[in-house]
Length: 537
Image 1 (cartoon, rainbow, N blue to C red):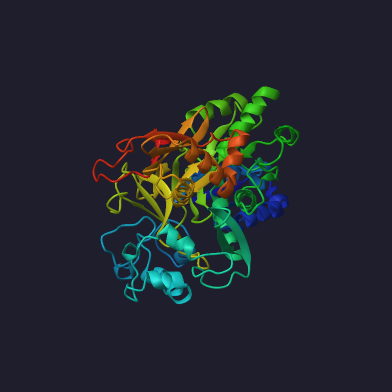
Image 2 (cartoon, rainbow, N blue to C red; image 1 turned 120 degrees about the vertical axis):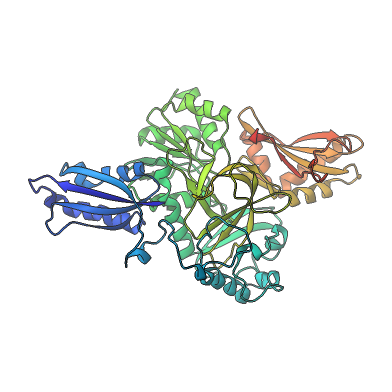
């Protein structure tokens, strides 16, 4: 996000006076959502000066075009320029804008690990969070027991171990939370039927997340007046539908929402898109492709849809071809990068053709890329690393150096822009379903009653416009009993996988039996690669 100065002059007929109430209502709404930092007319009342906070000049011009002053034709000329606040008494009030230099004595004590988002983060800000979790969270108190009491360097902290993190947090009892959850919302974030994983947020945390995420929607291509069909899944403690609705409610541009949902029959969805003239559709890629096939087979095309927003999965070339056939005028864009457990992480970059590229949200969200083998921090562009997230303002269920489960590379480190490349070894994302590797190995152990399995490797593939999870099994010979038993255990403990396969959104679980040398290993270390994501290729 950057600041942009907008100056304009009124037409000499003074017609702007009758439009002013609507103009100020429009700006007040933008200001409430963080899109306006400062605005007002000169004493002569011959024009106006506005300071916008936005992702691009194109986004600002779109906001200006939505102003009642512009729509009513009372503005004579407009000038837009990126603005860099440097000195002045108001600087401290410009929250979230371009980073400003601070005294060197106030910088984090560094151990040589530059971290995106902490370039100028002061000791007190991180130290306050660490003091809070050490005092109120038994999990973090134990995790940091061997560290100095005044540590304020993120790179000195250990990475979160997923098994320990989720083992400390249950529905009835949690050693992770810093206090009772008495106000807010609860969501499911994977796990199994016997051991579900849930993330909790306070009301203020959820509202702030929705507002921040909503602020990035214009960079994704959302315009004033869009009619947005929310086709994400709702209910059963899933977050995507609710969060998308809340984020659009906080968008800095006015839109009309169509809360259709992902479970609606496709014929109803298509009819609603036509009846309400939807211009934007938002859903996971598998749902968008399923809809595209139905559109092509029934009504041919929906040309009024100009933007398709996706989240939760990657979009591939064969899927883009399906979308182009059904929605010929639609651009396919990422709505943003987030997860239920780690929270919001990054937003889309305006006018960026690669939908995998995102920019970290503000200075409260910290992203590190670490070498998968050495753990060394990565700052150079084009080098792949594990995505590690820290949220400096989430305090009830803290997220500090949490492996998100993705691999990415920096494309512009100073501007905190990165490209997502695929999954790391924490979990396998297949369509909209996440299967954590430790859960899958536990299922395999339960199914292997005859000792037929030597070792396992998870392979993610993409074919025929759908994701596929292949389990590569090292063993002396194929065991049909093991395959049959594992499919039954998977359906019992992670029923969403089988449900998505039966809908045709993903391929069923596949097996490949190999000898002891048939599993991929890291050529540098000789270690087994637990997850091989072939989709990035």
